[in-house]
Amino acid sequence: MKRDAFFEWLSSQGRPILADGAMGTLLNQRGVKFEECFDLLNLQKPNLVADIHREYVEAGAQIILTNTFGANRYKLAQHGLEGQVSRLNKAAVEIARQVISSSSNRVLIAGDVGPLGVRLAPFGRVQPEQARAAFREQIEALVAAGVDFIVIETMADLYEVREAVLAAREVDPEVPVVASVTFTRDDRTLLGDDPIRVAQYIHESGADVIGVNCSGGPNQLLRILKQMRSAVPEGRYWVKPNAGWPERMGDRIMYPAAPDYFGDYALAFWKAGAAVVGGCCGTTPEHIAAMNKRLQETDLTSYENGLSITVVEREEGVGGVQQPTRLAQRLAEGMFVIAAEVDPPRGLSTQKLLAGVRLLNEAGVDVINVADSPMARMRMSPWAVCRLIQEEVGVETVLHFPTRGRNLLRVQGDLLAAHALGVRNVFVVMGDPTAIGDYPNAMDNYDLVPSGLIKLIKQGFNTGVDHAGMDIGQPTSFFVGCALNLNPPDPEAEIKNLRRKLRAGADFIMTQPIFDPEAARAFLEYIHEALGGLNVPVLIGILPLVSERHAAFLHHEVPGITIPNAIRQRVANGGEKAARVGIEIAIELALAAKSFAQGIYLMPAFNRFDYAAEIIENVRKGG
Image (cartoon, rainbow, N blue to C red; front, side):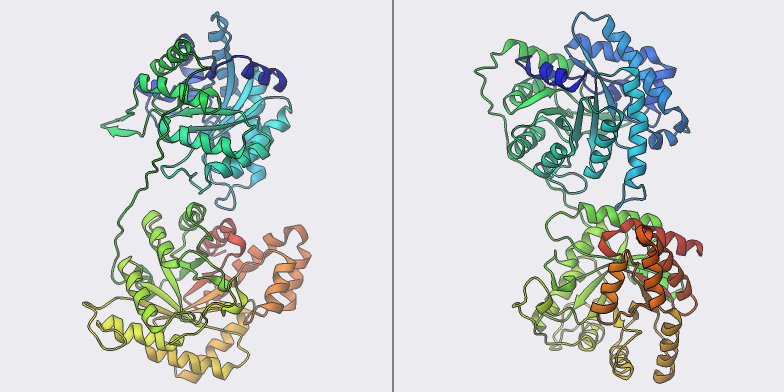
């Protein structure tokens, strides 16, 4: 079907088009375990798949989705079937075609395309062009087999949506495309995008229909649909809710929303602007039949929508802590530690940050450093981000704790708050002056320099008293780091400051980024001699370069960073592959650091978590 004909069909019905319900729900009810490959049933049990299609058509569905939700190379690889993409997709279309050929009603076949099941860069290792190729492979098979249109559904990453839509357009510019996204309980995608952003992005991506599916029950999706339509009023909309939030009962997943309840919401979806309504997880032919019955019996020209309830659920959790911290344990055991820095988000959404941290955790990072208002720019409070990372991802954090902009009262209150949230590793720094940031007129004074704050923590809080010597109830157990520049303009002043920090009780050191390992080694040896030994572990700063301009900026404009000409030239010679060269340089520097330090402190630029993950994996393997 061409796009013009598809649009005409949608608008000519005078009522919402009914799509089918959840193939997976009925397959599971009929004995197929969720861990099995549903797509393989197109070859092994085609009659079972056909029976389910037939039941939905008999219930009134005018659209049936092929049994191909997971039929892409990445998901099929989990079952050793990555070479069967074309065969499985074509078989699914043939099953659907045989079912509708025996129906007296007009029923369209939608080629079902689900998410790849892998993270795309920058939150994963799969590059956009790889994702598009995987989508194109599946969509080519579906289009070649004769589907009427493509449904890209249950997406959580808008980058993945874009690649899927582009793949469909490359296969056939005229094939109609639905792009549908799923939301969490807080009305955001897993990566933090709200319904307005999603609708605008899908519309701009070139999809013909904007969709929302899965997520919670009908109430949530009605609320989301209204927000989407307010953002893109001219759009066409597709809505397929779950039958409520799922609950596990023994070996089965149960959904609470009854068919009659769905019937009521079919009317509400229509009045709110949906062109297509159906069901997702937990919905059965009975749900579709109930929707069809209500639509047939109701005068749609006079029906009023009164079902919207503006309730957003948010989940809370409680995390735990260990003493001493895992970072302290690893360093005490002489392990080579890898830390990676992240910046808190500028707004409320933390989903993309958490996705990046999960990738770093999978790659083998030991601890995540959370910066505090880097470059004096407004960000979410870092101790809240530390708590979320530890609770949601399960990786320990280091809280950056600048003294600048905090008076003595606030310093101590913030420390107690961090400790209560389970954040025990702190990295004490002076902090960036507010004059360079978003609020140049903001308070920039401070009551403590870094060595003074380290002393307050180690000799005060960790012994159970505050700065005034008052009892705080029980001692804290902070593990405290300090900063060191290995390429200082005044080496003697740097050593003098370091001596103060160590006397105050600093437990470990993290350095500015280095680009000359031999110079860094030489300065550390000089520090050993000047201090009569250096008995705390040192983590060497590593900052991956991404372009010639990036290297030039760091070298010329960032105090404490000097990049040798040979390194800058090497990045420049990389041209379009400069970022790849930067990764190679970072790996080389990290491996060199193993001979004179106890770890690295990785600072990925521009939130390129995928670059950082590659570096971590290579360092773990030894190059």
